[in-house]
Length: 116
Image (cartoon, rainbow, N blue to C red; front, side, top):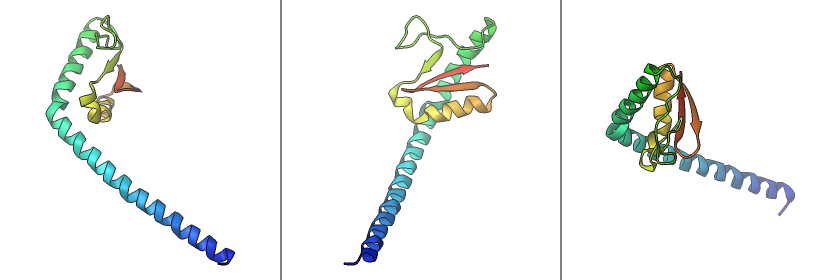
């Protein structure tokens, strides 16, 4: 085998890996999208209503951030922590509140902080 043939074989192998990865990534994104839609239909409205209630309560107290008890901090926390079952709609919830004019900061492990 010549060096040029080896380079071509290597390039072909690399291109196949990239192509296979793109196909697999598309499948993963489609599965995540379907799961997000399923969880949003089931829990989305309830979570939005709950968070909007916290926002209303904080606003009436003159605050600019929610401060509610959570599993992580029962004494109250500015970060809203979602359950693992709600993980698929984490980004969709953040987008919902951003579209409504709130500033939303993402935290690891399903957390978000909403300010106004």
